[in-house]
Amino acid sequence: MFTLAHELAHIWLGESGISNIQSSDTHTESQVERWCNQVAAELLVPLADISQHYKADNPLTTEMDKLAKQYKVSTLVILRRIYDLGAISHETLWQTYSEELERLKKLTRQGDGRGDFYRTLGVRVSKRFTNAVVNHTLEGQTLFRDAFKMLGIKKAATFYEIARQFGRHS
Image 1 (cartoon, one colour):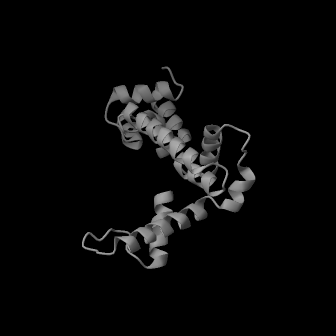
Image 2: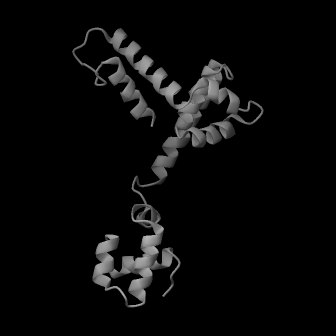
Image 3: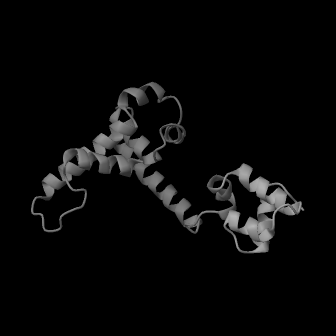
């Protein structure tokens, strides 16, 4: 979301979002990037709004997680906005930023970068539709060939795993 809002700010400014390698004025380019970051941050996490929701009594990481979910942005964006509120020091900002960045990198390394087919199937084709196709197929009302096409699969083993994951153990 932040990247999208940042690029939108570039459009509003009428400036390219692509760095010009041949540009001799990197200071201006840096100012544009900072301005676009500020616009994106204010658009997604308005200071007036976050100031009402931020609870300084809670642990910083707890607040970061809570507010990131609420505003649908990364914890790093929230951390910066908490700093912009004046609620934490510059030192705390960069210390927490480093720790959070390392935590996020570790999470990324733990996964293989690919989504879980079975966990996203219910979102892609809807849980209700998936359940209906599985049930009708197992009851003999729909051909397996047709069920495979509707669910976007090719193997019977995948179909039976879907049935298991969605609550049918037949």
